Amino acid sequence: MAERMRRLAEILGLRRPDSVPPAPALPVYAVGDLHGCSGLLDRMLARIDADIAATAPGPTRIVFLGDYIDRGADSAGVLARLRALEAARPGQAVCLMGNHERMLLDFLDDATGRGARWLRHGGLQTLASFGVRTAPGAAPTARRLAALARDLRQALPAGTEAWLRARPLLWQSGTLCAVHAGADPRRPPAAQPAKAVLWGHPEFPRRRRRDGIWIVHGHDVVPEPVAARGRIAVDTGAVFTGRLTAAAIRPGGTVTFLTA
Image 1 (cartoon, rainbow, N blue to C red):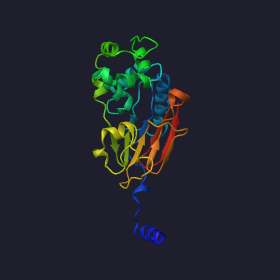
Image 2: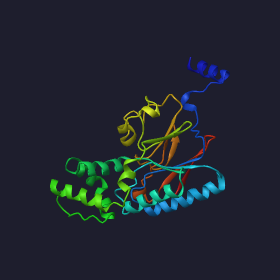
Image 3: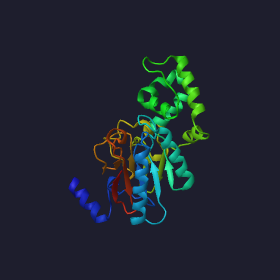
Image 4: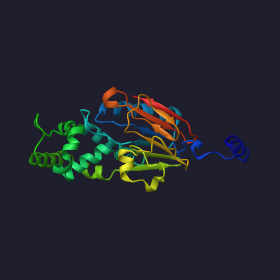
């Protein structure tokens, strides 16, 4: 029966939704998690500019998939470069929010309640990159957490906190949707819960979408980038491996990968 249905679909010119290619309206470069690796960011931008000059003259989008901060040594430098890039190339650069940006904002909003979690997952390195001193050793007290949040807010360059809060959760063009961590496969992009796109969804790795939308994402480290079954995964663990990956996705549906 399945084979008969497949042949009937071919005769009628129909395709299964999960066989639709990832076809944005213009060339898109989706960049994986940076985690404070400013040198890799600079190298990737050079690779992307060279690829645009060679293959895709005209309008393009460079979509950064979140997690710009934490773990690496230069979160401050990464944020400064991304903000400068947006200003220099209005409309071309899109910077999404990742779960690590969300944790930093939660730290600023409720340091005593949610700050310790952020510090355990790379926040200490981000504080250091902004010149905020932390005492080594035992976990900070509630009073110290509140003081660190105050010091960080004062150390952030003007406009940085507002910029972080304004980061979109997703970006879509054609049959391509960019998010940080994944998506609920049963919901359309416009109805995705923040938790799903920032932290992932349990069914995202297992269940195929039925609307023809491809999800390009970071968050989960993969040994090699991959485009299959409606998902494009590009987080090759830059801060751990020294390899930053971007997916170049063309309107015709082809996907290639750039590594810096």
